[in-house]
Length: 195
Image 1 (tube, rainbow, N blue to C red):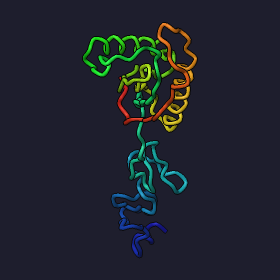
Image 2: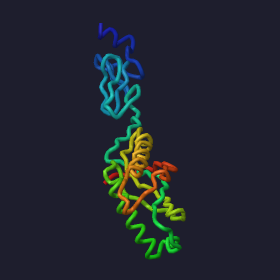
Image 3: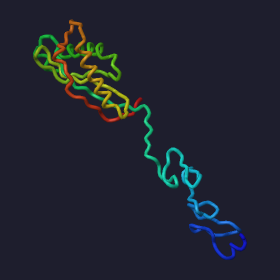
Image 4: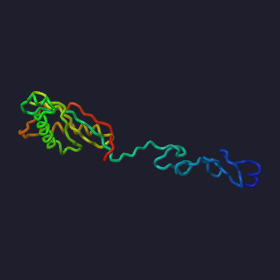
């Protein structure tokens, strides 16, 4: 029947040609009658479908999947807070370049490191402003958290831990006013490649 078929009709589909008793398929098609598309990008034709490698998709594995592999990626976050330190405010504390300001800043950073240092993601504090009322300290706690879909929730939880930790601190060589300690704002920043 094959020889009779070759003389009378072309059984090949999709532009294939009948030669030497079989279909010669054009690019993009395969199979006995050129009826199966050729799978691209390493895909394999099985049971009427292209089985694609993990990074490709589509009827013939022609499309690259939108996959982003995330390794060692972190997000920076800040928790804006305010607290009071029961120390007399002096005019020198208005000037960030003064010796009094630098001394207070050093003590504040050391104490907050003792209080917050055990909290996952803690990277330090940055004083934004000092003002009267004992000493009112507006500051940011700097954090680094893993970049994932739960990052905002993680930072919100850390902000609660930060407020509680400062309120529970009891060393009065540098007394924090627990009732004046509060979280003002929480911000998760852009993704950065980890080291």
